[in-house]
Amino acid sequence: MRVAIVGFGVAGTARLSGYRSVDGAEVVAVVDPCGERRDRAARLLPDGRVFATLGELLAADGADVVDICSPPVFHGPLARAALAAGSHVICEKPVAVRGDEALGLTREAAERGRLLFPSHNYGTSPVMRTLREAAVDGRLGRLESAAFRVLRDRHARGVSEYAPDWRRSRELAGGGILLDHGTHCVYMALRLFGCAPRKLSCTVERPGGDPDSVDEAARLRLEFGEAYCDIELSWTSGERSSHYRVSGTSGLLRIDDGLVTGRSADGSWQHTLVSPSKDQTHLEWFPPMYADFRRVLADPALWHEPAREIVDTARVVETAYASAAEAGRVMSL
Image 1 (cartoon, rainbow, N blue to C red):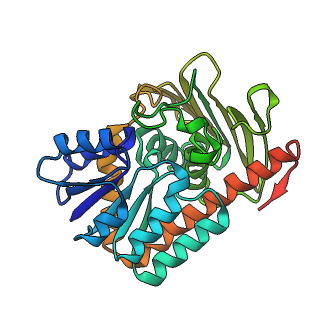
Image 2 (cartoon, rainbow, N blue to C red):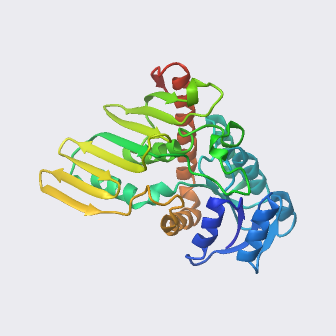
């Protein structure tokens, strides 16, 4: 399978390494508007080709799969161009900033008979596997609540050659931490509870209260009927740590920076995972995510599953921003 990576920053460079660790995929091209990044790509991919625009790639031989690793505001146009050219698309989160954009992209992919697959790497992470196993294996009883607390001392930075602080640029990112790491937490909650929330409320903090700045902290509650999930995010906490908890009628499980502790009617347990706060690229999560992509690609009857997750995630984040704009008012989806 011939793969083209579009956007050769931190994520794109990591993705090149990731493809080298899986069978059945060959990166044949890299696209990046920055000359210095193209030079780096050419050094790392001597047998491939390097282009300044996706249009140049598509005008040549194209690729079976276009893997989009650009800042979020470019995701929609790039995905549409790749789908129109007949390529399947893997796209970094968030695939879309708004719910209607997500719905339009997934419909276009379906109409063209191509798979649009989100790079939701936390979904195949050891953390998510541990949370999901505890929620479905019966040890905790009926799931009642979850809490995700992701603290960072700053935003993740991009490469020095191209807008290293793009995550703080509304023009490039489309939002702040709620759209960035919040997207991960939202689709994790969707998978954990098996559905979209019915209601939500959200508040955000911006530097100096400036409404034109992107949000750098957020608190979000997702209501799933009788259960709920609380999400707390910060780029200004002064520490780097990640904390996850799921509670059920019969027990509790926590993950604190990789330390897993649990208790249920059968007793208590403890073990360790690699902390998700230690590595921005999470390269070791790529093989299982790519395996999931290949599994879904092989069965078009499954293509509606990533499409639904793309749309539901975008709708939740968009509604959360609307709630924050009204001082945290509870809103229905």
